[in-house]
Amino acid sequence: MTTALITGSTAGIGAAFARRLAAQGHNLVLVARDTKRLAEQATELHDRHGIEAEVLAADLATEEGIAAVEQRLGDRTHPVDLLVNNAGFGNKGRYLEVSMADELTMLKVHVEAVLRLTSAATASMRSRGRGGVINVASVAAFVPRGTYGASKAWVVQFTQGAARDLSGSGVRLMALCPGFVRTEFHQRAGMGTDNIPGWMWLDADKLVASALADLARGKTVSVPDPRYKALMGVVKLTPRGLLGGMSSRTGRKYGPQ
Ligand SMILES: NC(=O)c1ccc[n+]([C@@H]2O[C@H](COP(=O)([O-])OP(=O)(O)OC[C@H]3O[C@@H](n4cnc5c(N)ncnc54)[C@H](OP(=O)(O)O)[C@@H]3O)[C@@H](O)[C@H]2O)c1
Image (cartoon, rainbow, N blue to C red; front, side, top):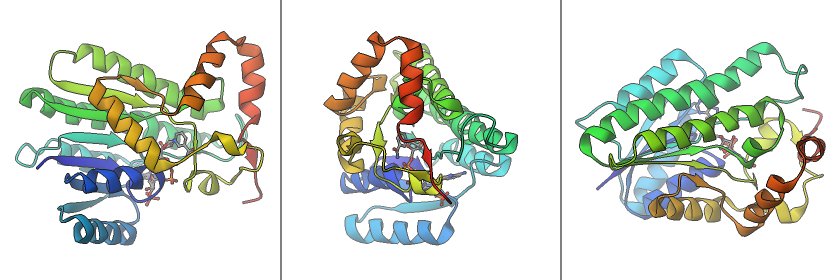
């Protein structure tokens, strides 16, 4: 039986990864901050699918949290075969409206944690000659979209470079670039979603099924769903200035929270 470690497993895309991987018979290490929610999720997945679900409460915006997950990934007596670096969030506000502390927290979770956890996992996977890492980025990586998009652009670049450096080692890395997905993300960030057209919303379970298929095919960047594949084709042909205006408006209406 193989083991997958998922950060941000308790909601949205991470929870969809947990459901699908458990249904496929993988044991899980579930990582998030809310211990009660983690425990409930572990019990439910164990009862439904008969898998072992381990809980690791960690805040990936802190040194201790990142170190605890690194340590688990480096435990060669209980190896992790698939790492899903999924935990992430959006800040409420545009550039210069968000405090520097919140900007740095985003970099800690989206960049430092992804770098350190990927490195801890792949060092161990390379010595075993197999393993996989999915780093959840966003289509925001490909358009001018504030510091959030910039952090996700780092995830894509990092993952592509690391995948190339580790090619032939048996370890696969893939950046997953979703469009808008119905999760807790927008509500947590206090973002209004009523200016996002209905056709742009993706289903988390379908997204995860496509992502795992793309990893199995050996893709290093996955943009699931034909709608977003087509949109990214248009993005490549659109002048950056025009793109900046369009992309910074869509889905960035900040609500009252
Ligand atoms: N939803 C979208 O439209 C969309 C689109 C493209 C990319 N993404 C990316 O997809 C990923 C998952 O987002 P989602 O939409 O599924 O969000 P979500 O529904 O808000 O879930 C976020 C998950 O991450 C955990 N988390 C947040 N901050 C954390 C921290 N500091 N340390 C540990 N765990 C943390 C949360 O649990 P706790 O609060 O208990 O820690 C929760 O399990 C993110 O990287 C996001 O940037 C989302």
